[in-house]
Image: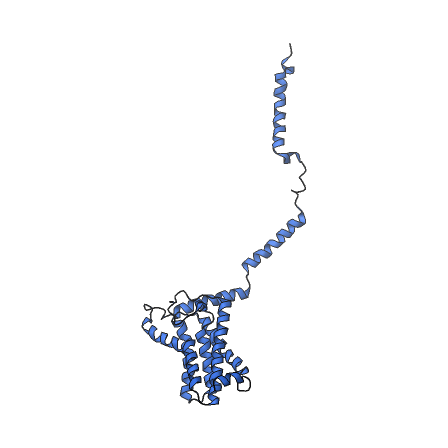
Length: 261
């Protein structure tokens, strides 16, 4: 009869702890120091490179460029000022009673009245000098329409949210606001008139005031932001220089002067 020490039951009981350790070691391979696969190994140099790259990315996020901060700040100031100055944007605005007057000023700077008036003047003009001035004014007005439409189509800046789309005689590109076509036209016409018409000093002052009032009315009506008008005034002032450079005369454009003679 086998003794209890040598019985199979006793041997199984003695092996049980060892078997449990072996089972745990299979469940946790790292406990036996099994070598890691090459795919799991970490390259120390790559780890250092990652640790060095992270601070640089953090710096990029925490320290944006000065130009970006300046542009965002100017945009925020522009939107805030335009909202505050849009006092005639609606009938219920603080200066809503002045909205009809602002709309009359709006029409005075529109392209259709200026084009119609210039064409009428060409038909009624009896002097070659007068026709030359009017032909170049017509050229300036058409150039203004083309350049403003191109810039608006490229920039595609929406009009202010407080604007009411009840503008006089608009086209598809007029849904964009940068730059202000009224401001460009007013500045260009102002400079054109001052250079080619002999006016008394009070009338010259009124022409300059009209150009600025047209620009201000665009913001008060909520049609444009402040930067739209400022850029438009500068653009219109420079457009006149283009007209002067390509000034049309009976020598440079004889066909035009033959048509209107």
